[in-house]
Length: 159
Image 1: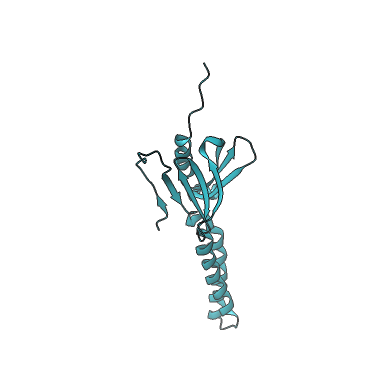
Image 2: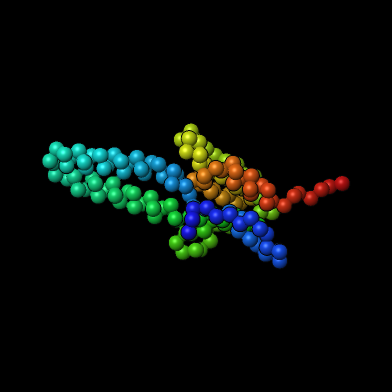
């Protein structure tokens, strides 16, 4: 399955269709790469100096990289014509669901490192205020926020 998929055509029967689907970006786990690099470098230094314990450090670095692969698939974000879904990528079980017509606020949060990697968190609040969805590690979060806003139903006109 690819990282991002987009459906461009609406279902003519009015059924719910997937408009966007993605897993958190690889760049979201930069901190784990840094720890893995440090652990691997220490292991290689111990190996070069012919000291014991290098296997543990290199093995630890490999395990951290394995954690990235597991954690990245933990959450799948799906935008349909009617809902936003956070789904467990392993079990397929929906973790959080919000109907587009119940959303009150969409915001993008990015720190300097996230901005550098062009990722961010989309924070979605419900009208009732009791539900908050956070789509973390989303590549091009402003673009995805605009897609969500474009699918939201127009507010009723008072006249």
